[in-house]
Image (cartoon, helix red, strand yellow):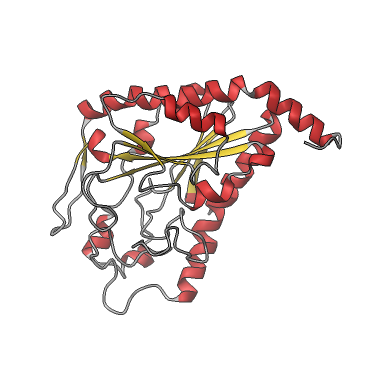
Length: 287
């Protein structure tokens, strides 16, 4: 069962790319309870595995779930806590989509028991794999970097006004990565695309939960605007799905590759110092 929950591509470099909202499948028993909007899975982070296909050749580890965020949102705390207190947000097991359309038929929303079942069945195996993979990478390389790869429609009035920048990085206000990596992010030039760090999206649950700077485990989230690689369906009054635009995608993929290579260069440049610190720590020398 675990292998059907996600696909984990092994790597050789100290970088794990996680795509928790890339899945599109819905189990049959859950499908029977859902509306047309629920079955449409319109809020998927579409085709990220396709956009980041180059990462395998660069040696990155990649983990991708099978099931839709509508089944359970892997980037939410298992206790359902809101990532942005006071702001509108979808739940651990979402009951509405980004257009506030109901995902479940009348009186068929998941119960507390069903939510607990989904945590055990879908959420826990994915997170165990993320934790185990980061631990393996850290053991081999003395450090690890987790890139949380996301995408979202450029206009979602429920969550933000106007149009989103193209590249939206989140570092939990600089808490999830080193100052050196944050500065490297600031130096990256994605023109002609627009970019921002810790704007509307500051990094979700995974970005915040797995960062451990004492163990040299850093995390960064990228929320990529779907207008950079899709024909967006922005009419909120109907159930629509955006479609992949090959021409746009081929223009943004080199930017993503440059970003991933820059992360790998950063990890390589810092390898010896991290390894040295790790050895000092294991020898009982305080840092």
